[in-house]
Each structure stands twice: as structure tokens, then as C-alpha cells.
Length: 320
Ligand code: RIB
Ligand code: CA
Image (cartoon, rainbow, N blue to C red; front, side):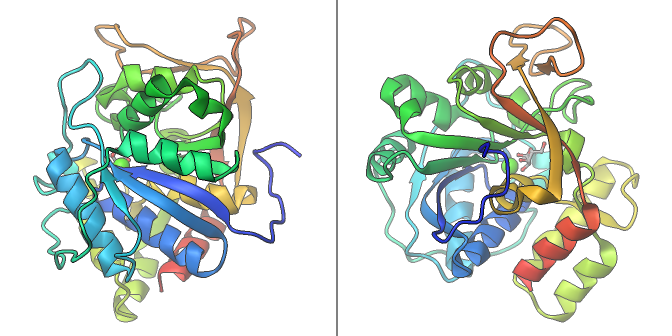
């Protein structure tokens, strides 16, 4: 049984979720909380990284989304306020300056954790006996720092599920998907751990959309997730000049749903490396799945397709 296949589990999967909470990160976190309620996941810790917005915002947004979900008890740790090497880039054009496109949330009353994300992640991995899975939905800076500071960490992580990269072309540049482009060096460090990595890039996340009628149903049912879908539809359609029509992308929900229902997706094992220097191609995820010239390290499951109806029905049902 490969780590990429569905496995009937009687115990919840222990996960650490690292986000740059933004609008679709918020939906991913709400879905993870719903999956924990169903005994599918055990959220052992959450951390925030600079990405869609500066760290101060993504940290607050992450805390406040968990509080909205009734889970202020889940600890949130602040991580990196900038990429390993590159200057910070933000995605205010999609997520607004505040990271949540103006959605106002009640401020979490949870205590503010002072431990850094990478230290807390390592401490958590020590407690999980090799079963901990990482879900990364922003730039991979925190994970990279954790693997560099604690070389033994890679022997304690079962697999990594990321939203990031693209074999089909980028969204912030012609070749760069935002999460990888924002910190290409960090993404390369994570890839080079040799751990099994499920890569949910734009190849699949641009197909994993929720229909407008489903968003309106969430709104009718007064789902807490409805405002996030609504604002995402508005902002993304402006950014993509209406090309998405009456649908909504939720990139970051893909690795969360893959963790429990991999059978909704399909893909291929390959090697992936990140271009960190190219004038035109910095941040590109270069894959070897369709070439003869194979990379020596082939530890990535490149997710390339999804059953769109089953994905959207499963996600919407979780968020009702
Ligand atoms: O390219 C999409 C990714 O960039 C998502 O994770 C979104 O939240 C932004 O971080
Ligand atoms: Ca994100």
C-alpha cells in the first residue's frame, strides 16, 4: 500500500497544517476542522507563514478562523515573516491587504503562542511516532526551516501534502504558482528531503472548483464558509477576467481532502525540482513525468486530475 493510496483507517490521521491564511486557506482550515469532527483527522498543530499577506495578518487570520470554527483550543504558531532568500511577495490582488478580502472575524481569545512554528512542529513530530503528516498551503518557508534546523525531522514525518506548483504554467508569473514562486528555495529544500510529497498544483486545483449553485446553497444554509466562497468568487473572477464563470477555485482545500479521500484524485509519481534562478522561470516546478531524462529523486505524487463533482460535493457537505 503506497502512501498515496486510500487506506481504511480506524484512527484519525495526525496532521500539522501550515498556512498563509488567505481566503482559500481559511476554507481549507474549516474543512480540516470538519474532518476532525468526523474522526478523519487529528489537527495536532497549526502554523502561519508570510504569503498571501504579511505574517502578522496571516497569524491573526489563522487564529480567528479557528475561533470561528469553535476551535480556539488548537494552538497556532507564528513562523517566518519572509522567505529564505527572496524578498517577500504578497497576494493582495486576490486576498486583499488583510488577507481575507475584507471579511471581518471576531478576534480570537486564545492565548498567543510564543514558540516559533518550526520548534513547535519538531516537538509535535517527536510525539507522533513517525505518523505525523504535514499539510502546507502557503509558501513552504516554515517547513524548510524546520527540516534545516532539525535534520532528524524527516525521519519523523509520514508524508507531506502541499498546495503548490504547476506543470501547466503559473498564476503569478507565466511559470510560477504563487506558493512556490514566493519562496522557491524553501520548496526545493522540502522536495530534497526525499519524503513522499503529494503535490496539488494548479494542474488539479484549477479543476477542483465549487459551482456557484453550491456556493448559493451554502449561503442559504448560513454556512460559516459561505462568505469566503463568495468573496473568493468575486476576487478570483476579477483576477482571472471572468474566465472561471460561475465557479470558485479553492486551491488549498485539495491537499486537505486528498489526505482523507485520495480516491477523488489521480496523478503520477515523478521527480520535481524548483527553478530558483531563472529570469523568466524562477519558481517553476520542473517535473520529469513525461520525459526520458528522469531526475534521480522521484518522491512526488503529481496530482493531475480530480472527480470535480465528487470533490465539490464532499467539500460543500463538510462545510454545510
Ligand atoms: O496559487 C494559489 C495559492 O496561493 C493558494 O495557496 C493561495 O492561498 C495562495 O497562497
Ligand atoms: Ca494559501
